[in-house]
Image (tube, rainbow, N blue to C red):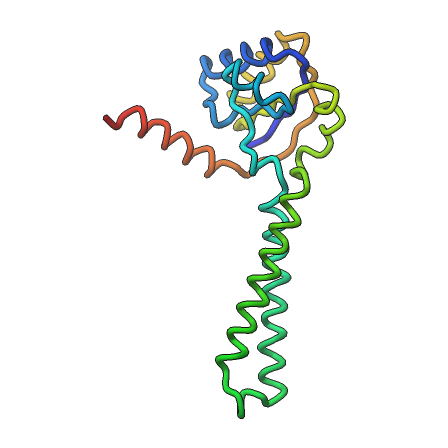
Amino acid sequence: MRRYYFVSDDLDDLSSIEKELEDRGISTPQIHVLSLDDAGLQQHHLNDVAPLMRKDVFRTTGKAAVFGFLSAVLVIFFAVFSGATESIGWVPFVLLALIVMGLITWEGGMWGIQEPNIHFKRFQEALDKGKHVLYVEVTKGKQETLLKEVASRHQKLQAAGSEPSSNNLLIGAENSAHRFAKWAP
């Protein structure tokens, strides 16, 4: 998949673009609008970016988890090479290793919740000026062509780049949940 970014200052236009894309086969979980105007997004029934996804929590937590794991390994190495396990036993060192890993991972999450998502940092100036960012995740081929066709018909929409996206599984799961919700009584 590939994620395409567009910037606009017109929520009405973005609403019609979202409807056009959905009518032509691109599912709602593939389309998001990032904006500081949450009320406007709700009023126009646009698929906004979840508050947790606006922050860099997942990336920083993952990095911190790796660092926490390495720190836990150091605690275990210290226990093995110091000979302390002979007199104290393994339990305190295993518990200490788990606590160290957990605290470092938690701290990474707390750090990430204070930072904007790394993918959205470049749009902060536009957002501060009242603009909105539409991003659409599409598969190569038919969906990509369709997106470019729809975007070319909307003059207020400014292309703002693209990047690879690895949200295939997440979008597939969300599509399945929507289909199940419509099917279930």
